[in-house]
Picture 1: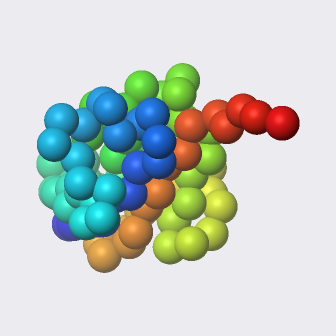
Picture 2: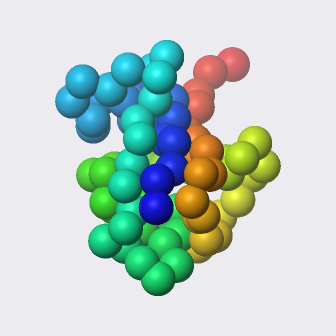
Picture 3: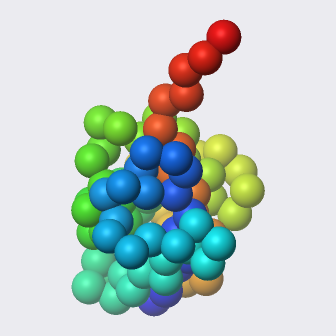
Length: 82
């Protein structure tokens, strides 16, 4: 089971060699039977407390949402500004 992971801004720092143009192909075979966005984040080494938004296939989801083979999962940290 493989998913494409895209990381935004500071979350990229947690994955050595992460390329924002291509993202990260993550193999979730070991996380079966039904991995979630949280399982995926833990599997690739992201700190859950830094994730504020999860998108699966372009739609906002929760960390508890399941992910399936071929999904595109994007993680975003809190964004400040004003």
